[in-house]
Amino acid sequence: MATIQVRVETTRRYQRIENFGASGAWSIDPIGREWNDANKNAVADLLFSREKGIGLSLWRFNIGAGGALTDQLWDPWRGAEVFKASEKDDYDWSKHAGQQWFLRAARKRGVERFLACVYSPPVWMTKNGHAHCDKQSGSTNLKPGYEERFARFLADVLAHFAREGLRFHYISPVNEPNWEWEGGQEGCRYNNDDLKRVIHALHAEIRARRLGTEIVMPEAGELVALLDDEYYRRWARTEDPKAAYTHGNRSKGWGMYGQYIRELLGEADIRRKLTNRISAHSYWTDTGMRNLRDLRRTVRENIDRYAPGAQFWQTEYCVMEHHRDLGMDTALRVARVIHYDLTVANASAWHWWLALSPYDYKDGLIYTDYRRTGEQNVLPSKTLWTLGNFSRFIRPGASRVHVEPSEVEENLLISAYTQRISPQFVCVVVNLGAEQSALQLQTDRKMETLTPHITSSQHDLARQPAVPAGSEMVIPPRSVVTLTAG
Image (cartoon, rainbow, N blue to C red; front, side, top):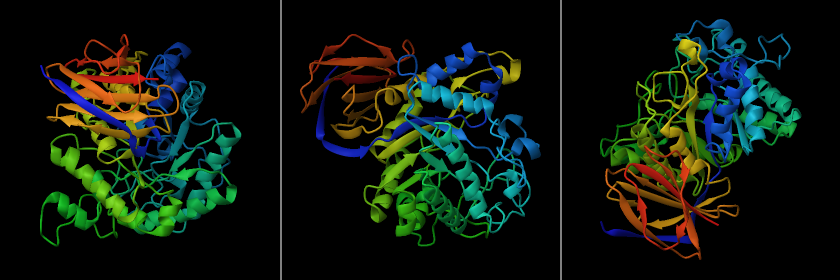
């Protein structure tokens, strides 16, 4: 087994890392309301603690649209409460009690950033009175002229929690606006003009109230929806001048959907109101180098055309397959997605979908059978610990630095980071292969030792004895290893 020489240049810096996060969505609320304290705290420790869990640095809170009040969904857990049940009602801040428990549990355990999101406007602001669209909703289900009222509602929520000492640093007012969202769960489509009206109204309301909350948009449902048609054709390897991304709503006659980089970052006023940031979801991109590497490279090039160095946030991901997997197969697929999002798309933030899932689906960090059996069981997955190989150690403000090589035969993936807090140096190595690998790190920074933390079929982010820096290190097969120093 030949030793792989890896050169790390800490003076060559790339993007600044903002956070690693996950969503409570709708599944965390009944857990927070109905479980006993011991089991709730066990879940919170796994998600938020840097000693007992993966140390997430951002937590996503679902404001809710009131689908639980009006909609007969295939899954009642996918219809949320809402703080204001009608236009005439007062706010009821006791709603989302389970979510609020986890919000406070996250802060207590040192989570640095919070993001409030909503998947549909409140039901009393929608054309059809539901938290999802129908075929008569047109380009969006938000009532005409309701952008300012929607903005006031969101700002009221932000202001309330700020008074409670729970400040939201970010607000995401739409989710996957390129999909139809005609039932199944809370959701709302918006064409590009709809999006811009929401951005203008929300930014003005936040600024008027001096809330200091930043807008995260558009949470595109897939990476290709971000691309200009020109860049889409380049990635698709077609010379057909009419070829364009048409998935989702774009061909429905409701206006323009997609091309979000051009439409949002390409307009100076919108770019300023979005704090030079754009967001999307990495679904369906975990197979083949055309998706894993080429698509992310194209996304980055398209962003830099309009706003060089602008932040790209990957704000929702899971593996879109049935049958939960607590083992390393799914964990390694996820590790590969995280690696390429960070090293090729230069993602500044990376968020998982359901922090806790009751489903037989590859969508959870932690699983429970509570919805089916009533049992308050807690089932951590290897995907949880694999995300922890990044989130526990790479903290807000870290910088990704140059690594050569960053991948070896597509089986060994390597990235490195520096930060002012401990640990000051972090290197994450993903070994997708069935054989162990040996590597030797050479760095331009003096380090005495490196401490490995291993996730594998035998280990859950397990700390190992420190080894001399510069010595040969063995990376076990099918594992994720984080090396820390300082």
